[in-house]
Image (cartoon, rainbow, N blue to C red):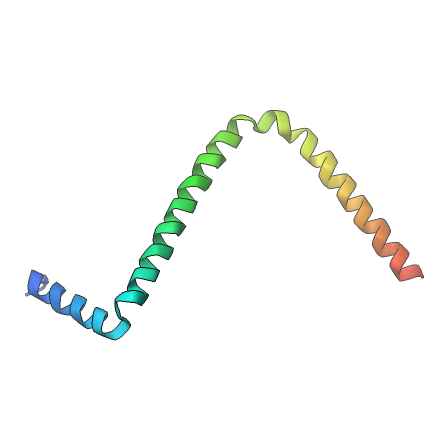
Length: 81
């Protein structure tokens, strides 16, 4: 009684197709597939950049610091004038 048989799932699928239509379901499936592919690519890039992290870690704070200094100078100049 607690589990659903194949007939229950077929009826649910039929109702979903009737409500949303096949074109919209196809678009949702394509979007979901693209999101999963993008997530997998991001995970691969994360593991590849993780091996290069110690070499880049020293240069990143300097770049971020100089960008923050430029922003601060621009903001101060705009507020004073």
